[in-house]
Image (cartoon, rainbow, N blue to C red; front, side, top):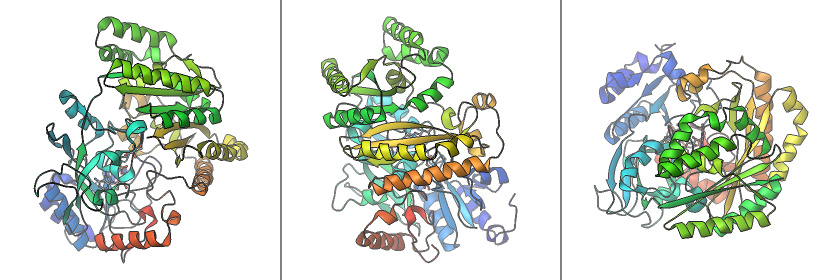
Length: 535
Ligand SMILES: Cc1cc2nc3c(=O)[nH]c(=O)nc-3n(C[C@H](O)[C@H](O)[C@H](O)COP(=O)(O)OP(=O)(O)OC[C@H]3O[C@@H](n4cnc5c(N)ncnc54)[C@H](O)[C@@H]3O)c2cc1C
């Protein structure tokens, strides 16, 4: 039940939403509203007053129009697998727009090489539907893809599967159907009216306007993506480096060479966390999947045995480890790519190590989200910057200097840090410091983690001092990234987007916001835009 009487209950608005989506798809119980008012980083101080879950574009359009006519604020929610306060309610009378029922793969068209999904479809569901056709999208998902949605991923932009070759999630987009604040549906791309678009570029790139918008311009109801055949061959190689600088220099050269489909790396801190979790050898389910993926039982058992034997000890304690996956149409082409990766990495002071981790990344691309709490139940949150290949080593040195300057403070507060590094196409690297700190968990952790995993972890008490230390470190690190002109995904209400734009861009962005969402009802304050009379 609602805690206080609101406009929604007093004038029967809840019933009017129910008339559109059905009574069972409008929630006002305190537990649901609390869950919908959190992301992995933060809990809103002014929770949503209602959660409404439409199932079709038509229902979505009527819900949005009703919200606008009623002067409400709307916060679209995929899985809340993000950590930049992007969809948290910031003022009273916010309705959580729950996209979990808009989870369908609407049409797969292998002849035109397109797929159309609803905005709330997960990356895991998309890949499962495409696999029998031997197809996938070029960028094919973030590691949170078991739960995170394609609409959320396009609103935030993503890194990971396919990103080292094809770039971010928006690079796979052909067309979008966007529900605007007045309920009108805007469709982008080339194609006949009423049919799915088959090509993105037709005049100005309207789809691009809504990619990375944090959901502040409209709601992604339907998404059409480009398809490709799943490459028949893949192989894996891993290397160890003695410094973050050497690692980034190697990653930059590997990116320029355009070898990898995925490339990710960990510093010794993050590797230590991984080692504190269950060892690879203990994870029988993973080994079973290794056997299944190899196609031949003999080869599969050989690979699984290699991984089990390598266990946790495939690198030294102070190693930065890099894991690269190459894919292609022929075994010979993939072998040539791996050989070139080896040449580049060894020349850049790398040492080849067992490739178990690279292999396991592909075996379970979308694992359960158990890593959102640390090995002793600590809270977890990353922060990141997208750096140019040439600037990345210097940016890393300066970020690391923040950790050195704050070392005593972070240690006293029990904060533990590590780094994840990934690459985007042939021209960018992502540096992602990751924090673990002793602090209570939220309902979102209970929702997203496997119950038996969560049950094994201690429940920690509230610890505002530790969180304050993380907030300060995050602030200083974002400042370093911004000073170097880094880009950011997941801008939400955390990264300085507006501040980094020139006056002409700000005028355009504010103008677009005022035109598409005149009351500023979608995620007010997102991207730093004021937008609309209510913003
Ligand atoms: C364990 C873990 C691993 C992760 N791995 C990766 C990774 O490999 N790569 C990566 O890039 N990120 C990763 N992330 C970050 C995060 O999962 C992604 O940013 C993801 O895209 C969030 O999707 P979501 O559906 O949960 O969106 P939400 O968090 O629900 O929403 C994100 C934003 O998008 C808006 N939004 C959601 N749906 C729509 C829609 N249909 N229309 C308009 N706006 C919408 C929301 O209002 C909000 O502003 C990871 C997170 C976790 C917890």
